[in-house]
Length: 249
Length: 355
Image (cartoon, rainbow over all chains, first blue to last red; front, side):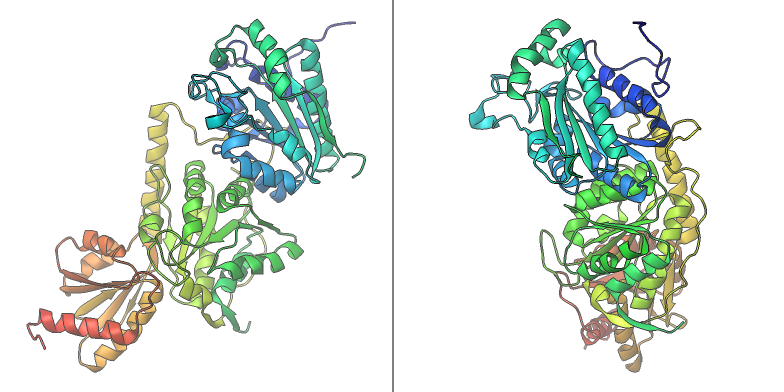
């Protein structure tokens, strides 16, 4: 087999990344860029980037993009997709954005079955602000705002928002994947491809939750970060297809 | 075309549709529910977009999304809901996106009540959201003017790439009057700046994040130059019986209407009172007030608040004349007779003719 390593056309060249070493965002950006090219979608895509580490996603993805206020990505995506149903619309969000401040927008855009795709990066921590506890932080996880570890008594439990929206009639495809191994990364690409196809086929809302390493804020090296995803994060958030209603629609 | 007997809230909606508004996003709140209901009934079946959002916050962000694609977009709410939209309005200003936001004001603070009030003047005219920006604010004084100003607001929004607010109140929204609507716009100029997806061209992005402080400052000054242009070109007001006036009353919207009734009463008493009615609250018609101080030294500000526009009048006149204030906050609607008595007393007092 001949290895291919061509630069995706929707991935900007000659830019210096602001992401930390070992961060998962770059991998997912690259997957998105590859799929937009392979599926011939990039020319008719508008992406919505979040407030959070991926706020500068438009520096990397060579597609039309608009930045959302913290949590409002799926509301903006709703406005775009409703005004221009012919376009391919993508909202890229992190765990604080999508499952804390943007919970209402996430739940209701999913429940309306908005015909766009959400890519949900879950690294169990607020990255850009410096490692505070996220809704998806696991029990006992030490963060700057749970220095003794997340305690259910005072901090509550990890929020499984993708499992919640997967139950909605409007949500056609939901899957949780991980970036911890090359095999998992290949599955991530496959899951995002299915989510994109769901939108292309006009079948409704699709969401892919990606368990993604944040070595800087986890205070681990990159290898240990990947192991932590496998051994800890994935135990709380098991991988797999959470719903697939494509056949029914 | 014939006049139609229609409420203010329905007029906002019908005028917007005629102005080419194709997308409406909103959340129910009294006293403006008829507006969204009219949109639900009349926008979707004409190929437009109506979404009842999960919150005012979501609605204003849907507005951002649709406006970014170049559509003419509107949202509406009443006071507490407008507070929730302020974040999005700051983003619209930063992105330089056109949109129309209707505020049918009610009593406050907090939930307040659902009666007409003018307590959101500060919020509307001072930007309201965070950051260094302005929002043009139009204040209709009749249902006919709701139609005219709604129509105009979409043009202003597009011309200056800015959110525009129309500040009405529960009285304006619920009043029914005969209205002559403008013709429906057939076609609008292409918006070159809109996000349409890149096609075969280069990609573009809209961001309000500007980490470079020098660049942010340039953006702030660019916005300020635009606001100056708006102030120069778009300041609007009405003068009523001001030709021979020795007392100038300053009021907008519902109170301007009440003031007209009061003026007619006290003119019968021989007091030459007239009205300056700001139609744009921002930009505020400073110049005319300054000019009037040459011939008039008694100004009376009249609001359904504890005195908010009063500050703009004070800033405009700058000690060149006496200013007094009559206010009824909390959703209380003053009567022409009540205000006429107030003007009469003030006039007598100033003349040293205390009765």
